[in-house]
Image (tube, rainbow, N blue to C red; front, side, top):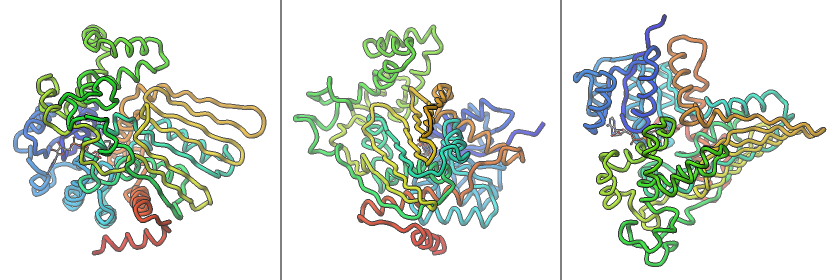
Length: 472
Ligand SMILES: NC(=O)c1ccc[n+]([C@@H]2O[C@H](COP(=O)([O-])OP(=O)(O)OC[C@H]3O[C@@H](n4cnc5c(N)ncnc54)[C@H](O)[C@@H]3O)[C@@H](O)[C@H]2O)c1
């Protein structure tokens, strides 16, 4: 039996600790994390304790970690968007194979430098495009590539960001400003652009884009709304973005359950909307309900020092960024954007990204010369339908398992399995290379330029200019 893959972790935050770290703990035969770099002491200590990492392998920053001789075969880089390039370049230089969170980097020149460094060193640089690893998008890929739809003519793909996810991440939170994080079309949709490129097997020839920040602006604030939700907001009971409803009462989770198809989910959802504490008490004896509160805890861990202490959460809402009125933040990223693309084979595709959806999820439609493929992947539903043009045949593929298969429809887990298998010489190779991942990032940067400057971007020229950025 092969020994588990040894890896170091840079950034023990939400993704690093709760997704990749948790996966390693659940699969000790496949991966062992042997060192960690994390500046927040509590997180570093907690992570080290969970993974049995000795003090001499705990580092405050990635610089300290990579200054040491190579400590493991692989490095997982899960720092924030603007802090990917430094550690990833250092890891490649030190001889690590790298699993890098998306987006590769928040600037185009840095993305190019990363790809060039991976190609120069011959090391693996796997970008976490987790959706390629979901059953849902694998099925879409297989159906399109099988030719069953005939010649593909158009693709219409939507990334429907829920209004509350929008408020949390892109209005109040870490991705609210393009200069501090990255343009939303890169942060949110490098996955979707990667899927289009992968499923069609063709590169984008030209694109244009429109969109902007329409709603989350001061002029749309309800009359009398203060700067913070807890400062006596007159619309506390009706505003969809009222912070305590999200962080205290987990209303979005209960609302999603109340809309689910399974009657038992609907019942719990309705009860939770009326009396969340009753469901919390019930979760003490019904383990299946604990997921609701794990989700609330993971969101609270982002906003408060101690996610288990209601006082700490209350203080965060009184003083921290997540208690701000959504109309009085310092956000500048868009709340909607549409990208129109032409691909090499003449396929026209559109990507609609917006942050005003009743639920989180992606929908798609692929029209071919022989059939149409419709699909939806959300927290409540996962299905595909193939409608043949000749006759009346409709094939419906239900994938309810996707919803229960963990984060990103099971993509997080399968990405890790593929990464380990690829490094261990197993059969399941990573499905993408750094160069292939770059393509979606090029499209995102081009889309942002097209939106801001009102241009149509020719992708060949854009690619050629971009490649030169790495050489500077
Ligand atoms: N693949 C996906 O689908 C997906 C989903 C969500 C987020 N992400 C990406 O994952 C990345 C991490 O997001 P997150 O929500 O986990 O962020 P986070 O802020 O929770 O975690 C980042 C961690 O990096 C640490 N850090 C800061 N400076 C450091 C340094 N010098 N050395 C080592 N660690 C340092 C921070 O203290 C923090 O704990 C982001 O780039 C984000 O866009 C990807």
